[in-house]
Image (tube, rainbow, N blue to C red; front, side, top):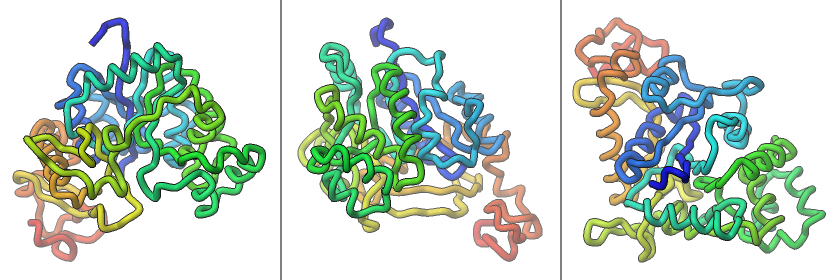
Length: 330
């Protein structure tokens, strides 16, 4: 990596997405080992925040933002989180995304284009429900967004963009994002709607990414295959896959107790049903626990299975005793 080009991945998560965030970081470490990654605290428990702080990845909430603020508000406040301590390029990655292929050369090619062509940001279109802005506006409760569109009818035929992975070459777009999102607060997907307004008001200043490569999700999940050990989406090398879809058949949401090599814990996982993506996800989940088991045990995020008794409160948080709850795990 060019030492003059400061770049990092940034994600954000609350307690619900703690383990998903860990899976993402494992995948980034494998395929982008030279690029640091950081986690904005959207509402971790003290132990979870301490875990990421121990790994030197935690970005604490700034004054004025609360852990119970909506994740859309916290996400679009990325500029406040990063402040002046993170100059250069920040690449936002949703916590339910994983890297599935090497892509460092492709990534720096995009960064070069952003600089050379003086682009504001880089973003991929939505792959599902694959709507125009006008179609999106008619489908969801977004009165504030609709009010803006009344003054910009030319935007309605533009493709709706997905904010799962976004390249921000400097702080200008981050400042614009925070301001625009604050004007749309309360609408469905207001932080993503704000990015759409920024991009479609200045279409020539935006670099459009190929979703098959940079944000394979929704309808594209069905098109991910493997050949010669490389995951491809509709024929293109897939670098990032996103566990989000308008079709419930593409994903499996699990919030449950789990066992991992003699340890027990409670967590939420959003899992791909595509077998190739599921295998990659399970690989990084296993690596996350293997690489961090001692710290997770020390912080009591994981417990030794052998230490749990039938009359103890169940670690799932139900308030019931183990013998009346997840007894089969012990």
